[in-house]
Length: 121
Image (cartoon, rainbow, N blue to C red; front, side, top):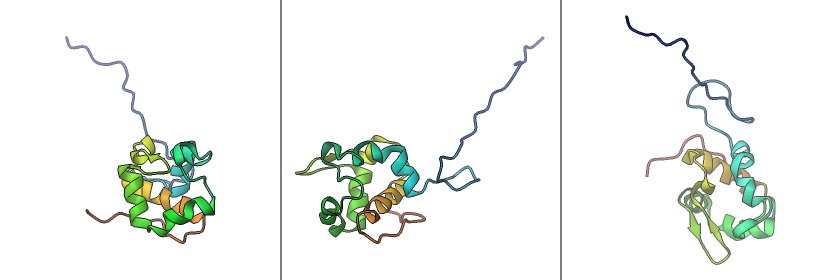
């Protein structure tokens, strides 16, 4: 006689607020990523992070261009003003991080478009 399990438990992913509904490959928008991880440093300008919405702090970064900002956010960066841990220390997909970069920079005067996907490197 073989023993059978009494129950089986399966956990389903629940999309965060701001995430589109449906699909297993649900990606978060920039606002949801910001609220989920980025705000920890960018809301209070911790470790040299440019404060959310601070046009003066963001201007030199925005001038570097979207691709450079995304590279620094995804891979991490240490500069004169402070440091940015890779993906803010989180585990978001690269495209989600790029969306968060666009969202934050746009709140400080940029006009970046949140990407649907990221090109292959």
